[in-house]
Amino acid sequence: MRIAPLLALLFASPAPAQMPQGVMPQGFVDAATVVDGLVVDMRYFRDDNFVGRRIDGYEAARCYLTRPAAAALARVQQDLASQSLGLKVFDCYRPARAVAHFVRWARDIKDVKRKADFYPDVDKRDLLRLDYIAPRSGHSRGLTVDLTLVRFAQGLAPVELGAELDMGTPFDFFGVQSWPSSRAVSAEAQANRKILAAAMRRGAFIPHVKEWWHFTLRKEPYPGSYFDFPVR
Image (tube, rainbow, N blue to C red; front, side, top):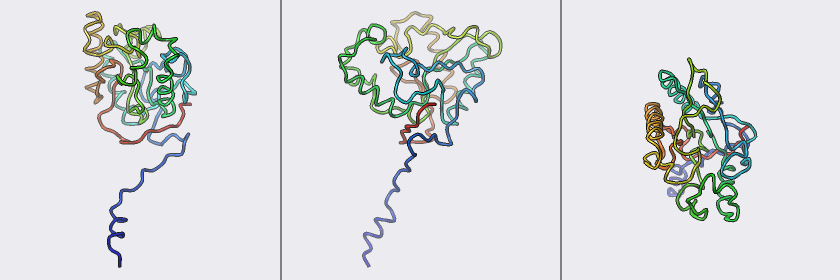
């Protein structure tokens, strides 16, 4: 009997399960159905983003997250309510095809129509090297969310849609001014960033070192997975 081949088969790591393209796993939910009063402003469904057009994979303005991430975000929302504050999301689950769209755009160095608004001080050739654009994203696992703070009147009713607190830079601004630790923004913006980061940390999210809006859930429901079902 050939023992070695049998042992190799027994101890071989199983191949990762492949989710059919276009099928949302059961572990994902629409965060707006879990987080009361969540303001949803999905920038990649519109052309108001650093690329300047709707991004591949976004067929609706919906915020999908894994159930644990959505539940954690709901706790953050409740925590902020005591300060008459709430959350506004810009991006949640991001299909892998959207990430690929970003990479293609970053390599097209002639397309700089949104440079003045989103990366005025950075050469587009350097966006990949500086990790402002990455070939893979935790967003594609449904545990990363891009968001900001909004002022609420009473309970979870926003004063007005888009009443965002001053964070010093727009969402998706590529530059040191967007780093959470940056002092190149006003004292008010620095204070608001600290409020957001503290609330998200209490909710078990980890902040990004270069993006004040970017937070990732500590515990990974789908480690190593990158989903590609469309947002619809």
